[in-house]
Length: 409
Image 1 (cartoon, rainbow, N blue to C red):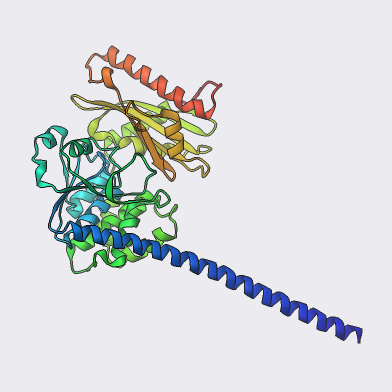
Image 2 (image 1 turned 120 degrees about the vertical axis):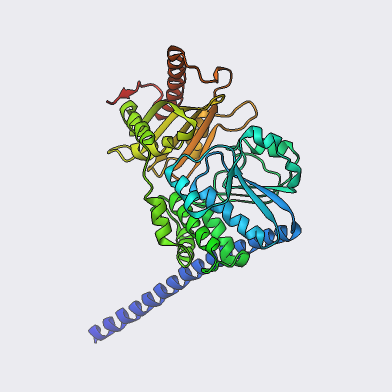
């Protein structure tokens, strides 16, 4: 009798427990559904706002400004916006003021025919900007472009700003979509397309090439999808229906130049290591080889027991010099944006010298009075030593304030 009572009691408890578990699972599923619904509603609202802006400016001509040294994310996203705008009879020119130096970026533009134009400062100042009724910032907030201040001075209103980096400055635009938690601007642009802003067609060559470029941009900014979030995978799955895998492979298989390999070798030879940080100054680099710096940082961060690498150098052309650096990290608790801003601070106008996103960051510091390349080897050596020492001291002030650096050959 006692046994039957216990069995019955255990059964009732088990049933109760099972019912409770089911309720908990339903509650979890309900929370997920509510969250997904909320995100979907927010995205629909954003797209609706962008659609209204495009309709408002129908028939106009706009200038899309991207960073001086555009990466695949910027290039592909700008192209996507150009195609979306064309649906509303808006003509767009994609422009940048620096150069394409990374071999994959050069291959991307050449193989896809991506319509981005390099315009030097002097040429832009002479250009008749009155042909544009509005400007657009894609994968940028204007702080990494030498062209955007000229566009602002010309009185061209900022219509659209779309970016996934942390906020750099106040923007006065009709439409702003800045999402620091999103891994790639290409993901944002793909979401617009999925929401009906553009209907990709596999029979349209430009659509296929743009989808390929977006896939490359998304891959690039998520470290080959290893740092991707759910929204990135969803965007990639959508693009997989349209992109050209052979074309993407051709872009990815482009070889590094000997000059880039030399910079990577210099970074390896000059690196200084402290507390799992690797910091390397690579000296003077030609303007056209600027993208060797982030590639060197990508290489140094793969060293055993290193979680963060910073590589910097003085990038120069005939009349201009900048200290340019890149940070790469695998440490989840290190925020590149906060680290760079806290280390290097702001300029006289209150603009930060650099910033970052998830696992990566960069900075640009004008040399100012000491700028201008000099053929005197002793002079250039002294100038480099000054900047090399100063930047390392600032970086180490956050790594380990009181200790000296340890050189690694």
